[in-house]
Length: 331
Ligand code: GDP
Image (cartoon, rainbow, N blue to C red; front, side, top):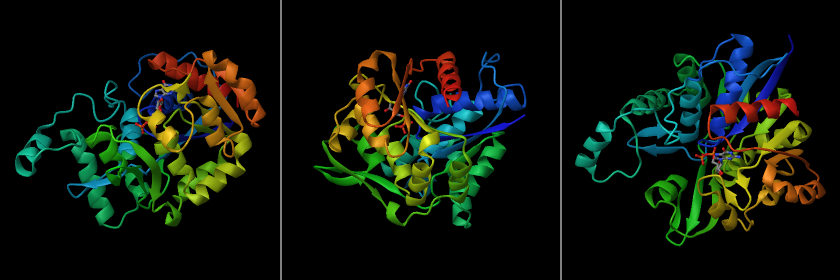
């Protein structure tokens, strides 16, 4: 059976919906059962085995309490392991927050939520990094321990930081979004350290070998562009443009969730699928937009992208599988 190499460029909460559906299809193809916490089999019939690699944004990584936290990687890892809290979209389901409460007693109010079980991930990762292991090795290690049979790869092993330029000065994306709840005005976005960041070798290799590259429905500014800003990776995706398909995170004039509208406006973009096409046109040859956005299709085609319209909202596992299957069918 031919193996189809699928690479997903991924952020966190939006991307994981698609990533776990693709993972389920991969698992059904190879072992005939799902490891993603879903019940039953999907009705997607594929005559090719899927080999899935997920290249994760590292721009929201942050050191806190002496621990290295990788929110997007962790969301993907927990999503594939079937333990993600689906309501919050981050962290482990049914986790408790006793350690955080104790930290608050010792150090004052904590603005970044870290669950007790989640903490184990950060402790192990930080120890391994201090021992000199690379982030991709650490991620591979935790995936193997959690029984994940897909490549979850950081875009880079180097530290890149997405920082928001606000009236209160420049700050880490997490501080802007979690501490200040996204309330400050944003004047710009910078990816600190990206010019010196090397691509993770395995991520680069996966992109070069991919039959299909899928840009997940994700925040373009805080999840996807920081991946593509890692020069070697961006160049590799540009070279693979004909094999790259993007899914819009915008329906009509709003993101499905989160602060994408604010970030896009800060970069001077209107909030609509045409702007998504504009941001991705050098990297992707195809864009999938929502059925109700058909009226944008001609404009986007005029920008040199093929356009596909379908239901791109993923409210449950069924929606996730439907979109994942659709993307594999139109490659
Ligand atoms: P983050 O790292 O937690 O911000 O997560 P991502 O970047 O992976 O995803 C956030 C983006 O996903 C937001 O811009 C949402 O508009 C988009 N999104 C969330 N759910 C969906 C969905 O069901 N369909 C589509 N098309 N986009 C979604």
